[in-house]
Length: 87
Image 1: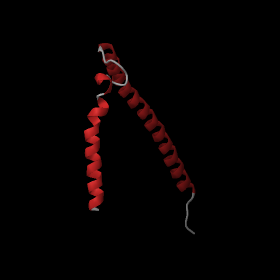
Image 2: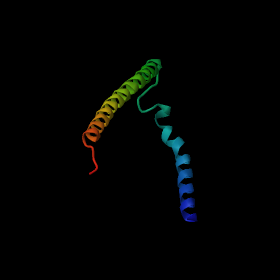
Image 3: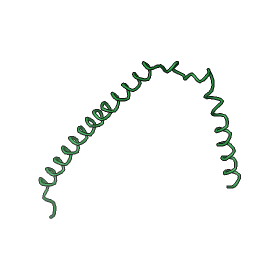
Image 4: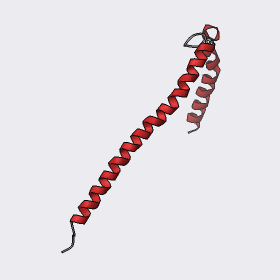
């Protein structure tokens, strides 16, 4: 167990040491390119648009699942009322 913890610690420290070198490529320029005002503004608008769309989609999914649950409950109640059970 000690060797596993030691191996993990050495691995984590190695990643932390190598991270600045990996991120410093291309003189600090990101993978998209130069981050000017237009790029940052458009990214912000995309984030603003994403969350209401996410809420809308998840609400529609929940609405459909609730309708399905209500139909199933109604059918179960109907079937249990039709069958009186017993002897």
